[in-house]
Length: 403
Ligand SMILES: [Zn+2]
Image (cartoon, rainbow, N blue to C red; front, side, top):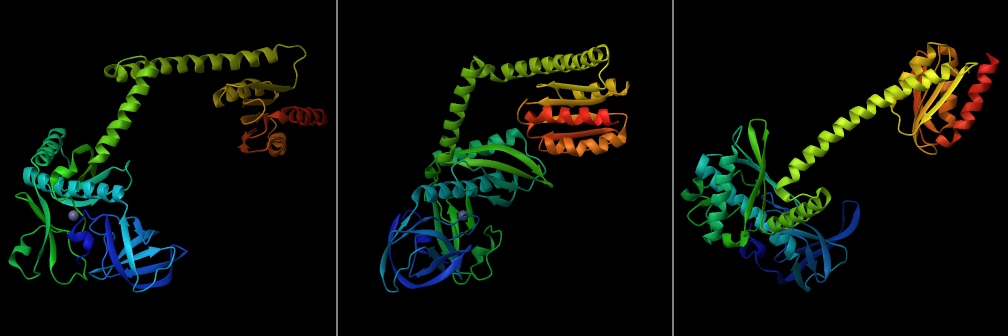
């Protein structure tokens, strides 16, 4: 396979001749598939996603590899067979892919050279925010090893080492010594090899930088263990600066919010979380006490009302359950609600009379526009219309009077 984009990955514009253009359907979209005499738009391959770009001013929505040395382009408008067309590649996307992909070659080579860790798979996450990864054949990799690999990669970048493609005869002895993770079945003719001068040779069909200096920088982010291997996340080139820019903004926001310098951010957050935990504990205790107090108050109002209706905006499940437990001891029908007074909330209906609750529960749920269920004299639900609690009160009062 040898397309113009593989001979010179830096071409951003190219004149091509349309060989054919016919209507087709791609992802349920009516469009046209176009074959050209050659292309600078890379079809997906070698772990690298396809390019975006234009043919004769029309957006290319996808490029796919067809056979060993052809690419099919999908566009929304037709072009004529024989027509000379200008191809443009979405350079920001392509150069980003070249940086991440070439970065992968370099990390793979250095991890192998320094620690004999082999790359078993890799992923080029698309988009400037994407984090790429390399899967290495080791159950674990230390932080020191990761740092050494990163340092060595960046040293190679600073040393401006050349990276270039060459084509070898499929029968050549040299090819047998070159690293590959397998070639597609339909590859015929010379095999493309990517060399990082003096460091690595690898069979690959993708687009790469022609000098490591164009990778600019590599940052290994973190590692995760996966089924006996280690996944190392990384970013290269412009993504490093984009990530750094985002992180600095984030840091500035935190500095403003926490009113502390960057070195104290973590301590500050830990302190806040500790205080929050203590305060939550106090709130929970007070809410429990309040539930008992409200129950006590209800039982000591003479005469005792056989129906208790209690609402608390900031209550919780435990709050409702305590009230239900306290008041059903005295054979009272309990209707407790928590949440917003008008919109969303929760309710608990409880009584010693299981039949009564089984009858009233669904009616209350309907009135408050919610979903609920229950058993053993308790019926609980989440509702969307708390403003109809007064209708529920009327329903419950009538039910008690009919008893
Ligand atoms: Zn490659």
